[in-house]
Image (cartoon, rainbow, N blue to C red; front, side, top):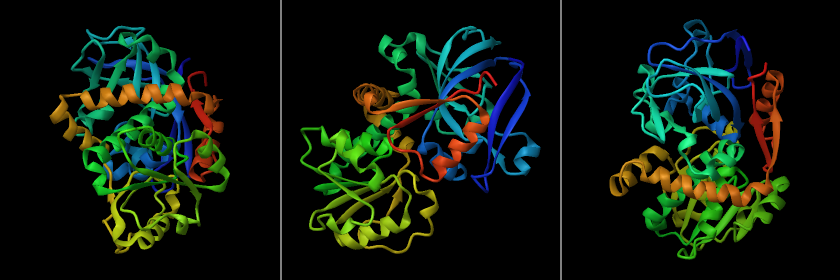
Length: 368
């Protein structure tokens, strides 16, 4: 292959995309060039675009000056890649990596803080970005089971790791006194990962309520991860006499408002996480109960790492998420997307919430 292929998304209009083909970059001093042969695509990537400016997701793989001026950006994804050129003394050609990459066939990284299991990208433009996303796993140093489930790792492990961090956030805060947890857009992978983590913990005496679309209700029921599953529009079926924590994966401001007014002062925690219904966002009104706040996973990870030791939270999350991914992988059908035009279309489908919960979208642009 003699060229790089990547997808750019317009930062001002997520439905506007362009396929860019150009010469494969050369690894600079201390850098490695990698070929990205697979990446997962989920509604979580829509959330990355939506919060790209606030959290800095657009900054991991910046476009050139002309493209940036025209609002083009690169949405990051979780992917596997092979090192095909190395100017690093510590990373060899042929190494297999897993981590945060662009929707592309190739990219360069600048390894630093290298240990047997991982390294950090120490490129200047990434130094102020959350370290969680600058970490690249050297998969040959990992247990065999981690190497056997690459697709699940790209699709589920990052989301289930977030599920674990959310689960631990609730446990760490003693559920904020809640006797019930509501999960908006529970059919999202992060949503049902959290639901299952809560539901399957015998130490928690908690009612788990999931909200989803009519089309995904059977899927969620089959997961056996909720005590109650309701569809949008039926929020009045939720018991409003119980102290409740709400974890919102949908980004739907109207849904948040409906639940807060239904529960009143019994809404003891309201955390905004995802944006599967991103166009239903908007300005948040003054609401009864706990004030909705944006959940920033690296913040809680930092809190826990001070207690458990550096990297301990992510290691616990990784172990938890791999176990959960293996348990649930049969419920997901993996589909391969290998043409840029098909990637453009499936991106639109994700934006329009048209991708059913049991579809696992894996993409490769390497052979274009």
